[in-house]
Image (cartoon, rainbow, N blue to C red; front, side, top):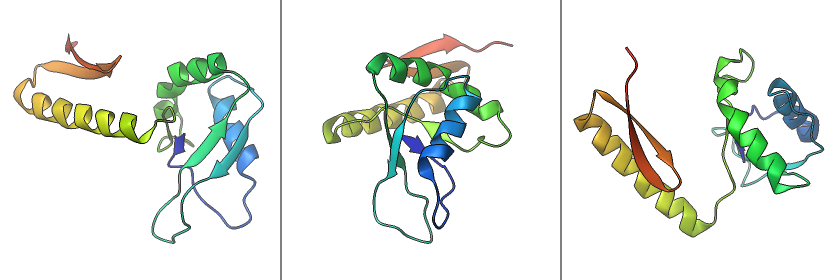
Length: 122
């Protein structure tokens, strides 16, 4: 799933997604489509299909590099989740935010369905 990719009239979504992938140093063949109802106030997410799950994992590992890109700074990648997985992830994020208020000296991340804490680098 690709979030934050600008939506335009008559856009060529496959080429836009390919451009994002190229900024990560990848050139996989992709099939992409926007999901949800079109609304002028929001940008719809893009569902992207790849030829193999190994390519998906490779791209998700590199996705943090997008924040350093000028053009794609506000674009985020996430795995496609079922409704149950989304609910579980939402609970993890809420717990992470709660713990972040208490443990300000630690960096908290979600890995493998659990919240992990790391010492902040100074």
